[in-house]
Length: 155
Length: 155
Length: 83
Length: 83
Image 1 (tube, chains in turn brown, orange, blue, red):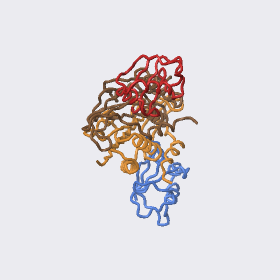
Image 2 (image 1 turned 180 degrees about the horizontal axis):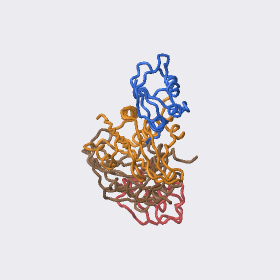
Image 3 (image 1 turned 90 degrees about the horizontal axis):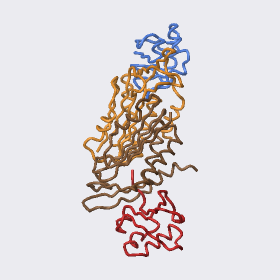
């Protein structure tokens, strides 16, 4: 059975349980489902934040995520794959991003989810601006996210 | 804020969404939540199965899982950790096991979840029996689960 | 001391637990396995491949050279297959 | 060709997109950045650290030595911080 990747970029929140249920619906070949949800923290580097605003490059973001989802499906034996990335204003405690991977075996599900998250953190065309008492500023990219993504590069 | 490990061994199914929500309830210091759910597959090695029956060593199973949960919390900066393992008869498509890890950062959440799953697969005192058209038989341990668990051993 | 059996070890022996009084010269888990296996056919079948058998003393995994003196509960079971 | 800007590149330039007609001797993304930066103060500010700027041609990431001929849409933005 071929894996299908569901990719969505949306303002609205998502329902993790619904996405996990959707990936396994009507199938009995799935032994492992991994979900990763990224959540807006209430502080960055010890400083309270009021909200994040997520901007993306429409068109490119979907295409790039789909390309990486397809790479994940070619590298690991996945039964299903879902990536949802929110955009717009997100307050602390709210969901930002969801990756769900399903496979017969746990290692494939874990590795594909980590691969996709490392990609989303370092190379997907999204940008975060944070609002705090000091005003609003763009979050800077972190070297260790690039390093995390680099470990998946085929040499 | 200290992490608290929730550990349950139960006959009843669990609700992944409820466990994920519980781990983040009232907190804004969590940036990443990873869930792993292990599901009863409809076939093993190409042969259809009707059900699994999970047996455990009461007393030892809880204590051992707690010891490994505490090891996970000492190795990675976790905000929360939940392990639920079902016992009794489980049919294809049903949940068997759940691990949920929460942390400020995704790598800690991913690694702790993988560590606990590798432990549960190889060394926690649970045993699976499968029912198929050929009757009922105990599932044999797999070497690659031992190998997966061994990668976490401190040298 | 109390002895518990799980999974196919339990099925082969035909009971989940029992209280035993091994002779004083039985000092290790491995020696206890040999002594148990010598009792009857069902036990011999359960322990026919002693190297496959896993053991725990008072809820902690032990190797077969572990000393049994002082143990309250010893358990025997196949390799674990949970998760 | 159409040019798009995102995040602080967009804010500094003061617009999200525009249609430009660079001179024929502007052949690469890096040369286009220099040309854009030379237009006005806002653009100079946006591109003041050209090495930090990321670029995409027709939705594909490219390096600054990429050739722009044939491009329909070129985008400039800071390092990505999604996920």
